[in-house]
Amino acid sequence: MTAEEILKQGTYTCVACRGDTVLTATERGVRPLTNWLREGADLRGFAAADKVVGKAAAFLYVLLGIESLYAGVISRCALQVLEQEKISVRYDTLVPNIINRRGDGICPFEAAVLETEDPKEAKAIVFEKIRRMDMDNFMELAIEEARRGIRAGEGGPFGCVIVKDGKVIGRGHNQVVRRKDPTCHGEVMAIRDACANLDSFDLSGCELYTTGEPCPMCMGAILWANIPKVFYGCDIKDTETIGFRDQKFYEVMADPANSEVITYRQTGRQQCLELYEEYRHSDKTEY
Ligand SMILES: [Zn+2]
Image (cartoon, rainbow, N blue to C red; front, side):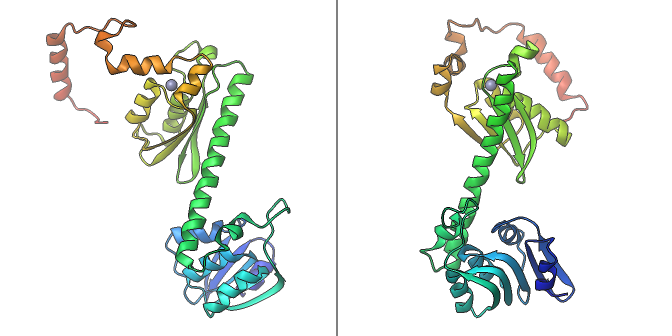
């Protein structure tokens, strides 16, 4: 079957074929193409078929190296890009521009690349836009998590999701009140959930989205978990305005020995050093 025939069966949004090799996707918009580019797919000699092709998709098809394209709907500027690159194009409907999903304007991806004629520049614009959309979506999930907690009276307005390879692998919200446990902050709950799901204490390569900038405890948990990327909504000053003491805690952390909030002294060092020695010679798991 040709790519066009497979597409017209209706299961996929986008198909690419060469000989017996068939790539299919079910996501809408430019996402299948950005995924293929990210995976380093080389579609030279491929015939592609796509339900909707705007200018952004056209540039990505050029970069993927396809030979021919069938489009259900194609915009005039997309057609121009493909024809310039000598890609043979067939289509059912030619439109001035691709319309957005709400139907009240130009598709945001097409709009973002209207001014460019350079495929690589277009790719950078599209990837950045997808990145921002993903970040907004993950923060939305963190906010939903937080709402669940405040509506149930479980604690403060703090929700968190942890993401790996574009997928949510852990989530949690503040449950200090419900569990009567001051360590149950959103970030800590999400870290516990992610570690349980991955069966690991190491969250390297993950991203953390949280509705409020992490307090010192959560910052410590994030560092212990090796999470390299943190995105927060409100900052510590915002959090102070609704009655939380994070700012004070950061001040204490800077110089605990001279803080008026806490007594902080050294004692029993010798015995504890013996304990450390015992650990050093034990059969241990490093973390
Ligand atoms: Zn915290």
